[in-house]
Length: 345
Image (cartoon, rainbow, N blue to C red; front, top):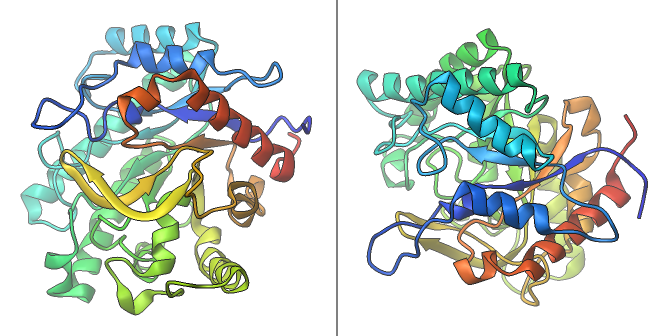
């Protein structure tokens, strides 16, 4: 393994929450404490995870929590030797936020969720457990049907909301990253995402969060066939030509990066449906050479302010999340990504 100290290697806490719940057929959430234990237990050749990325919502965190409660959470995380990196703002309707594409009241709720996330970030920063990372958002408009009624107008409305959110973040010394995922209106294809980033036009404060599982489906044109860069049955040469084309467009905006695997399926669980299926790092059906594909995104990553990368395994079954072998395989591939594409301080 390379001795590169950067980027730091993080594990996401939200796989213990996303797609979990008390509805029919849903598995129960996994507590923050248990997710931390599982992450801390992973070890490959004496190397371990450096930190976590964190979803600011119940049951892991009350976004309305007071400073004392947040400092206790910071102490808990630091007790495992972890840093906190990127934070996920609770921007969705039914949490504390609402759609960025909605009316004035809905958009104000969206912005209030960003303010909450910035406040929590400030507590973690002052504590010392958080030294890098961004705040992640999306449009909180699930599905593309309503967006398609007026693509230009709706993209402009989302961009206006995002600009105001970016100004709020800048006032707190934070940067925002919009999650590229096919389920979010206006962020559902590589072309729509690029149009939105350019419409916001605040690259110092507002950028892109690339997830390898989700961006694979960008290539195939799910939810946006007109933007497809590949057809089923593609060759390896066709894949990498298309992958490079897509990444070259989005990489300059990329300020947060998730290592992940995808088997080409659209998947969902609970209230989080019709999105990219995250697969185990060693899934035999995975479509991606994880280390090679990560390299396309990590070119010049240091210059874009990226100091860590995060594994995302959303909507894994609880039995998979509870298996130590899952985390050792994930850490192993993360170390290989850093060995191939990392850098010194």
